[in-house]
Image (cartoon, rainbow, N blue to C red; front, side):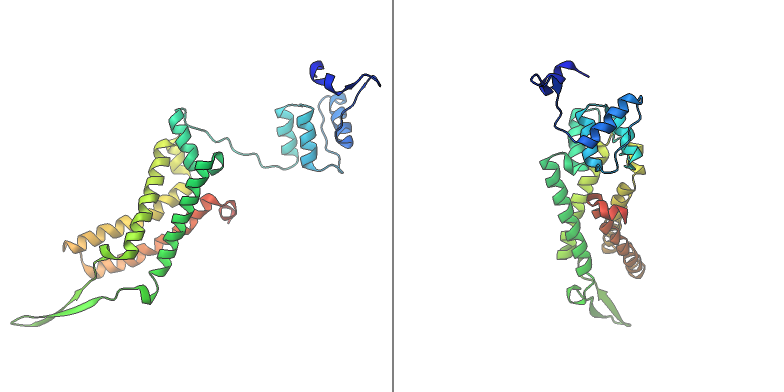
Length: 250
């Protein structure tokens, strides 16, 4: 040990060192030195207290890691950070909510947008919020035909709110993609794949709606495809697991 650090624990009246620490833990730490590196926690000492004693007596990071492994602690994976300072700061803002106050604020905004999107998805299924298709009849000289007049989806309040949510989701995804330290690792992350799948239905739906308004698509086929695609929006629920360890376990 360091003699200078020990001096503040020395009692000159008794000519001894006095450490006001956990007594049973000291026996185990003394045995660590006597046995040449064997460290065993006493059964009557809690793990957190014994860990504090190891840090106090400065046994080293390697000893701490070995102790945690022996006690069954799950070793956290090393999370690489971008080399560029600006990229690192932005990456921390969007990927690690615990890193700072602004990062927590962004995480809260993200959770609120996800919840709004899920609520909109649920409300759209209710009959009272659904705009019924309107019918009109065109009388032609030779025959009588009926034509369906579909409401304009781009003026629908649900569509507008959905668009705002997608703008945030897309912005968040693009920022994390361009700032991530490893592009291959980004695509291997299941949470990023969920984020991509969660926004795809909107753009597919938008493309089909535009094609239909321009007269390039078949309405019956588009309607069937839209119903299937909208079910994929359920994946947005899993976006919440990015901000919840419990949901990640599920």
